Image 1 (spheres, rainbow, N blue to C red):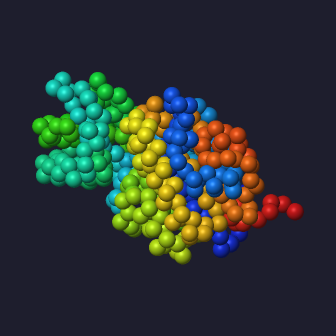
Image 2: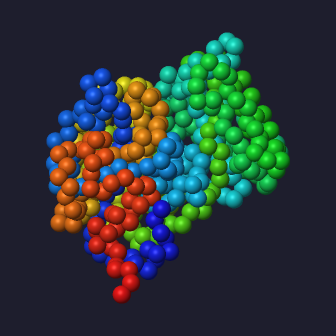
Image 3: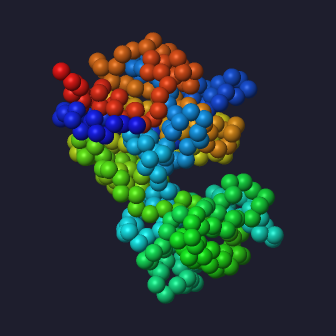
Length: 405
């Protein structure tokens, strides 16, 4: 991970600007034509940057470990995801602007489809639109479910099939298991306490789930729900204090705004619905920040859907819009992902993630021909842990002083 203690003495001011462009789940596996989605995509702009820069690949956590999105992004930001654990619940909550207190326990909720026997037939309820999610959440709110006199329950919609729930009360604990079994053909699991002090919290969540499921039981395809990422405020060291960078985050999905906010980045307000509009939003705030994190979600979503061509198309969309970002003249541009999501796998995987580092006049070229997994495996940066990326970015941006005499 980035050595926060060491960096404290080496950080130096500069006028350079760094962009971290994250194509969520970008890493893939070769198809029958022996190409990954990234290798099959038509990416003249990314390929040019690869030839002008240098390539490598990273492990979000450690070799062989499959990373969730929260830990994957913490690694990209230089925080050891094993040390700085984080749950999706608090990410979603912060992403939509819910306040945090020490008495809160958050969970990310997914609407799902249950059959007559109560087993899950679709973990994402057919990816219902956000409008349907809002109606379902409002229906649950109207039921005014009470779990205890001393506990306040809040539920809010997020995007698509996702919502967030919080319970606020003294003595609550987030040491709880998730209820999503991660596959179909079985019922949602019960919330189970990780220790005796968490038992009451588990009982409260189970009571709420039973009542909420009863409210929506006739609303197929979203007639059930699961809970993921029980968590509270992790109180992380802040980006500005660690790196000396004024940082902004541009993301469409709330969860990624949440993880950026938790490390102290400003969440840039925008109305972007696609990659080009995200890059335009970057231009509008370009003068305000030293560092911009820009997140692209649908590489991951299409991979999870098992749709090779759709994931390839998202990569091509990014490449076509890239000149808008390059026109801003970043001093350092890093293009990578938070984990791999091969469409053949239909899920996050443990495979290393391709990375491109472009820093005109500063990067040592490695003669890469283009941006793809095999080129990255041969790249001059080698294979390393994601938590080292920020130190590379700072060095190439001229923001690290020499260590020692």
